[in-house]
Length: 336
View 1 (cartoon, rainbow, N blue to C red):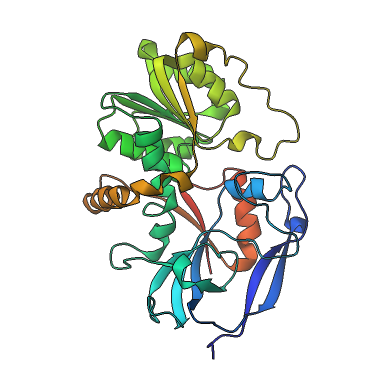
View 2: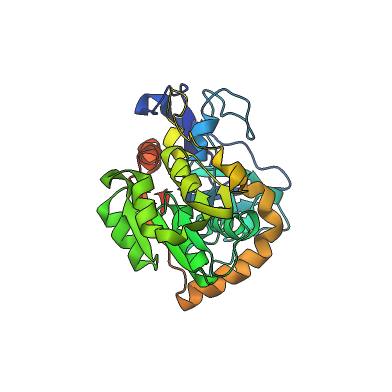
């Protein structure tokens, strides 16, 4: 018999058109199924809200199945095992899994990864030591093929992934790291984290500010979290043989119109640029290498991470909406 029989979860009530609203979500009381062999019951402590979730709210074919209407959303979560019918998990284990957006989850044991909770706070395994960190590490080093001495530009640099990318680049010997963010406070934080230059994209044209920061040298690598005007500016500023890791395009996730930029894609021909889109799911082979490196960097202070924490499952929809509006610094999490 499970110690908990009911829980609360967030359902997708309707599909957003443009920017999501509270009306697209519904808080629901739900009955938990009985545990079967090979399953664990997890009391979620933190859940992640991430930009990619916006795409899954649309009923379109994509790399990940759309969320179903009138059903619980899902996503990264970390919590404590409170009941187990699995030989591989015991009560008290801290595990990461993909059944977020709910306070309790019945999870297949094979889909719940035990994490070393003595290494870092549980929330870090959704951020710096989790998929966020792996996205930054693999995207920069494996996809963009970063080399020591490269000048790196990161858009959305105060976000969870972007802030990691910049610090990893510095740790690996970048010649210069430039970041863009949406407020003076975020720009100041990037400089505290070791970025060599940073600018507020609301202060003027991105191209002008990027070229001022890069100087005549230009940039060798662009880690794209934003798309649109940022991608257009990067294309103009990249050196011959430059590389772009295409991680996200948050500037257009809520847009109901086709993107206006980039209008200069043809420069990729003469500059012999490489543009590679990637998903973190395709980079899992680098997980062990990443964890070893990141654990060391966190331990000695080379890499630091920020979290924006919202309390209460009922506030998860607003946390997600705020994420898309850029209200977070670092990883946006909901504490349950």
